[in-house]
Amino acid sequence: MARVQRMEAARRALDAAEAHVVAELDARGATDRATGLRTTGWLGFAHRLASPTAGALVACGSFLRTHPVIDAALVAGHLTLDHVRLLARLTTPRVADFVAEAQERFVELAVGVRFERWARDVRALVELADGDGAEPPIERNRLTMDDLPDGTLLLGGALVGDAALGFREAVIAEAQRLLHQYRRDAEATDGETTIPPPAALYALALANLVAGGRVAAAGGAAPVADVALVITTPEDEAPCPVDGESRGHWLDGLLVRTLDRMPVRPSVARLLCCDATFRPLVEDAHGEVLHLGRRQRLASAAQRRAVAHRFGGCCFPGCDAPMAWVDLHHVEHWEDGGHTDLDLLAPLCRHHHRVVHRRGWSVRPAEHGFEIVTPRGNVMPAHRFGRPPDELAPPA
Image 1: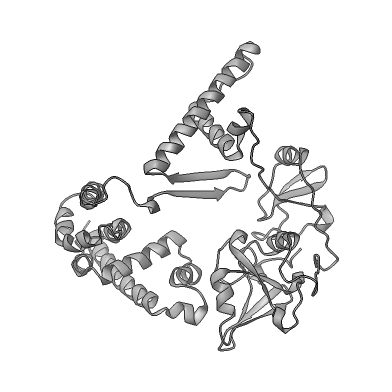
Image 2: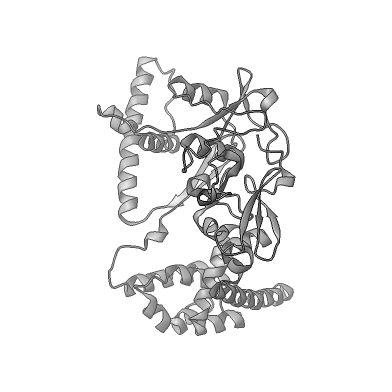
């Protein structure tokens, strides 16, 4: 037990020191100038930190710079980085003055109590100090989505305020409608139809609401969901970016996946293809799609789908921005006679699009996509699906 206490004290001192250095890096913009990645992105890429962990470390460092009492308590071991994370998250502009004045009180509240008890007390004090009253900060609304290998989408998150109330009412109402529908089906089939448990009903209700099922049931028109599927033949199938093997589900001899290479079950693919608009993705032997030359400056929708299929998002090393957030950068600038051709369009998020336009930066075609050249002459191979090209097969 004594060993654990000594190690915990050392860890808190080290956490404080790291937060100080990270905050200084962020204040100077050092990682952005050196690597093109903001501090959070650089921590995630260079040190394999999860994005929430890296972002929390930057936020804690910035918070400690302006709250010396909390900083001293962390260094002395009276608080942990978890305490600082919560205070940084609760400190909105509306309560910033109160938090600065109440630093000593926050430290006193942490003496001899578990973190959870302290957190409840601190949240209550901050809410009382909020002059605007009941409305919680919008950043407390959050949703996480994780794709599992079997095609399952794992959801998690939290809603607060009016968003929570509206969501709850809509989901409960739709779940009630579904429950009555299942009960009618069970009666009509003499009990052969199983009534799902409440958790399953809530999940189905949410899916229906997102897809516009409730609007359609009332006689309106449901919004159209645009789901793009990549269907390839066995001889055209490229290895999976994770382990080099073909991963997916076969549908009548064809492999079906989403643009970001998540597998789609045959039953789901058949349902989606039942009433679908088919847009062919025409490729030659080298994977070059729809070259537009000088006829059109902006990339077409078909080209964006093709780039999503090849790269999966921003190709800047260390960036995890999805395809919905990227621009298609002309490697050969349009003003200099560049063409709107697939092998000359590099997917870059808005931040990294600006980075490669800085003095001394450039992007050039390479064997497996593109290479990014820094002002010092360092060459960084562009990533595909968040991985360097030596871990992937050539683009399909």
